[in-house]
Length: 157
Image (cartoon, rainbow, N blue to C red):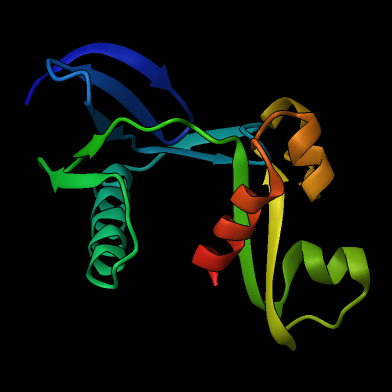
């Protein structure tokens, strides 16, 4: 499988079209970013490490019967996957309060939560990836109806 044209370039990877319109290649980059891309650097081998971690996670999910877009790992930095519609929702699964949850709600850091919390953020760097509720997702046309969010929550847990 060969790369034909660049479809998208983000902070962590490039997405390439292939000769098969149903398959894409993700090229994991060595770039480092922090604070929504304000600080930038690079570290040789980071892309390969991210590709390796992603490969293991996708294989694990597939083994557990959770569908993914993963097809194959092509080499150190490149992964073959099915083309998929991008949903601009970041799904955050928490069992322990830490980071922004602790700061924003005043929950002591490292508190074990009484149940698994599934949160949604809007994947939009210009807006700082704000929190979303179900109504936000509908207003922004990120989903067709709340049953899609229910499915995302179910799969995340």
